Image 1 (cartoon, rainbow over the protein chains, first blue to last red):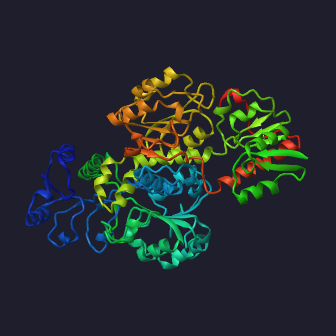
Image 2: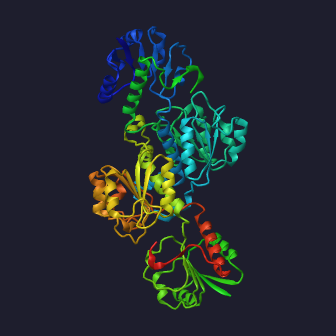
Image 3: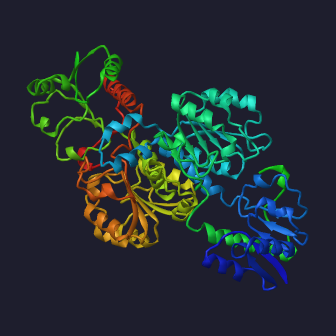
Length: 311
Length: 311
């Protein structure tokens, strides 16, 4: 029997879905049902690990592990681990939803949806007065940081609304700009920046970057919170240098109640919900099943990663 | 000198823009500066009228009028007038903004933006809990009522997000469906309906229409408020038959404070702001100038309409 240890917390229905989907030649234990020492013992005996184990668990014996399936796209927290077996992440599983949320958030800013929702709460009809503060989406110049799946989906969506889109990435040939100095030169003529960067790009959007942005432009982040100098961002929003922000991620999550971002009406906080949807869990479990069964049949699992390479 | 009477209310800057843009061979009077009898006298002497005159003004002498430029796209209120000179509306001037707002509103519903804005007002981080109530936009089946400029823009936008889109219109060859019975047949398999109909399609969306819609589907209206039986819509929202609505227009505007729509969190009210943006007025005045100057040079103005044809 192949022993599988599952760290992902699942409700009854998806748990049954997972158990029923995996080959009969496996036994499955769920970490959530075990005391910690039992989890470590299960890890020492497991051949396959599913889900995002705590980093420090890997300091314990795990010499039977032959495959690890993460349940996230990001894996920055594991970058210093030295593990010698194949590891897969969720690949582009969340990418389309993330692109939908961040682009919808940006469009909501331009079309005043967040202000209109607040007006509705107060039963306050302002009618045509709000029209002057709306912006046409068509014609906006948008720079996307990154050229992965989220960026590619977002480019397609933005283009259909009449935006001009430029992708930037160090090496990815999908990007038009590969150099930060060149990027900084076009920022003064850019209406919106969408950040899709991984956590390895720490503080990529720093005070210099924000200073170079066009006055009255908008910043959106669906990458990782640590890629942005949040203090500089807040200053730029307070001064009016930036007209607004759409943040799916922040430096600290949950966002502390003291954060000034909560009270800014020009900010839309999507609370790291970008990747989600009503069918997310069953889809994720299907991905686990498919990838683990590939491994069991000695096929190559999808979305293999290199922990030290970054996203 | 060609006498021009302007009904459109303009602030100082766009008023100057209009005066400077029109040919030197014209004299311009603004109705807003005149007592009503003076307005009627100006109408009796005018060759060109700009803006939406009150319907009853046309019962008064106007036998010099040779061209009337409306400042709206809709002109339902004038449908019973019998006027024998060319009349132009604003054509598709508002169409792209309207499509941007109604599609953004629909996407905001699917991605939970309105709920997230309310959570932000309460500084309430729910994080991943909200993911279960989000829906992927990709794959949604959307029916658009109408096949005019708003519908065509909306189709392009929706398609880029991965929606399947069907247009319906009595005659327009851009539409796939031309028959209401056929339309009612596909509604049970439709996730969202976007209404772009003119006021001449009174109560097109009635209780039978709503009854035929899929349980849990969404209704969006950027056409005219009178095209929807609002009482049936509210009932369907209260019962959960419809999961939500995005309404740029309502039967009565401003929406009365007693309306149940205000308190429905599954409804997004955009307060007839769909056509607007920060550059709307200067763009509209440019359109006036261009079209009036065409008339003065004996060229055919753009967007000529037939009052009795409907939109």
